[in-house]
Amino acid sequence: MVVEAIETAIRCVNVLLSHCRATLGPGALIMDRYLYCQMALRRARGLHPGWLLPLLSRILPTADIVFYFNVPAEIAYARIARRATDVETLEHLRGFDAAYRELESFPSFIGIDATLPSEQIVEGMLEELGMCGLVLQ
Image (cartoon, rainbow, N blue to C red; front, side, top):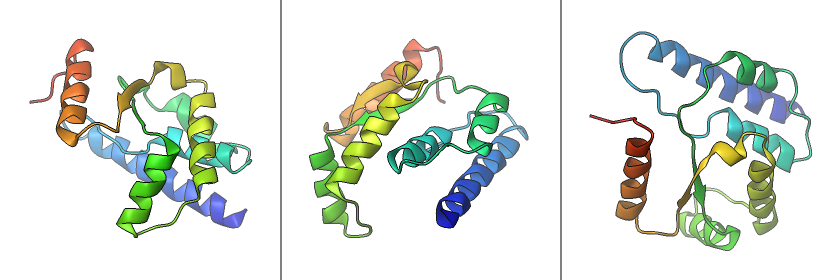
């Protein structure tokens, strides 16, 4: 339980620092694994979201767009095994995906087929950004 609290605190501090840096100048704030990741991770582990994640979700600006990389758990598991830098169980990956899909905000996420080649994934993301009126220069 203590490890999860520390992990959540570290991720929340990173999110807060990124938001602070973004206020210093023009541009876009692009984040990997934002607060949604931590909320889904805690849910997948059967943990309560606590008080910090819901608080930050209420007070921080809402994202203009959130991409969710759809990839079957079996493919994710094989990719993780190939990388050999970390270890996950197939059951955890399935539970993590299910936990993401149970998030209240999940229906607003833009699903990206992450089984496609990288070039097509980037193309799809750029197309979605353009349709939302968000243009990267």
